[in-house]
Length: 133
Image (cartoon, rainbow, N blue to C red; front, side, top):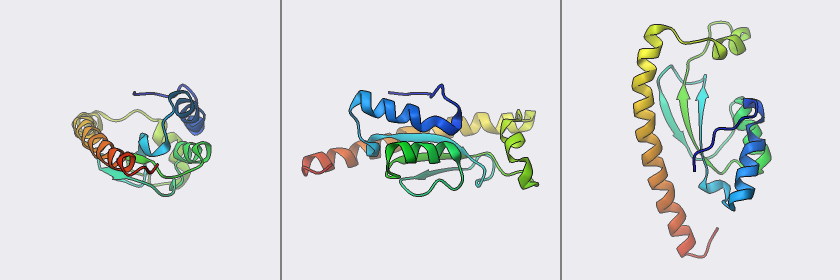
């Protein structure tokens, strides 16, 4: 299942909790894809657990699910020079050259999503075979 919350980004946890509840899946079966200002524009990283690093959508998801034990794909958008400009920075449209780079990054991100889902499926199947959650 692919879901895009219709809530504000800072309230993404509401949608995540409802999806988990309605589908009967656990947080370790979830893959969250989000922007990350701590990564340079176009950099992609996979993270399997941990803090939110100030990303309010991730914080909301962690709080509502009650755990940080879920996979994430972090896509770098870079950081503004002035820390006070973060909100404007992440809401501003990309430049033409940034858009070209992002089109390539989207292709790379799709591959990362597929690879991560395969790994998650293998891990979750091993856990189920062992009778663990």
